[in-house]
Amino acid sequence: MENENSITGIYNFYENDNFSKHVGIEMVEITAKSARAKLTIKEHHLNGVNIVHGGALFTLADLVFGALGYVHDQSAVSISASISYFKAVSSGTLIAEGKLITLTPKFGSYSVQINDEKGNIIAVFQGLGYRRKQGTGK
Image 1 (cartoon, rainbow, N blue to C red):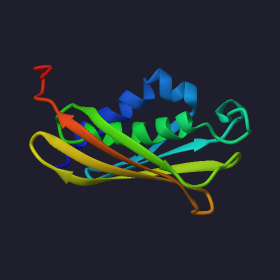
Image 2 (spheres, rainbow, N blue to C red):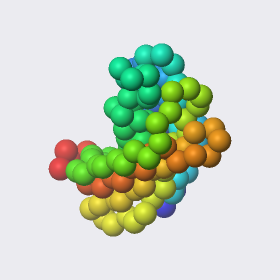
Image 3 (spheres, one colour):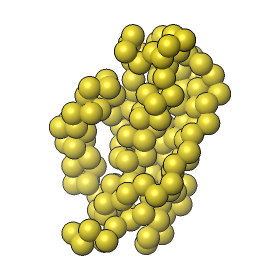
Image 4 (cartoon, helix red, strand yellow):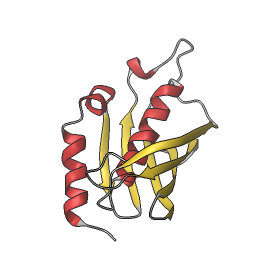
């Protein structure tokens, strides 16, 4: 169930998240079942062969995955994540769109697709999160 306070809290979290600011990721939209973020490619995102580093792509997808994991008034931690890279890119803006696949009391499964501004699929991320009981650390 979507909780407006949860979504507002997630936006506040990302506004105060030093890592996402440092990388240059902007959270664009969060709902109960989807989230979207963007990254404008800069020189520091490029690897030694002048394409976006796989770690930058993974980070973009992981931040969207993380936002989705916190929407339902329950913190979540990643227990499994994978990414497949389909197309190299070295300039422009990347958009990561994530969606909830399934949600149970203990687990959430999410998929994040990263596209360039022309709509080309750059990478696809799949993540599984363990939904911790609020305030217990378990």
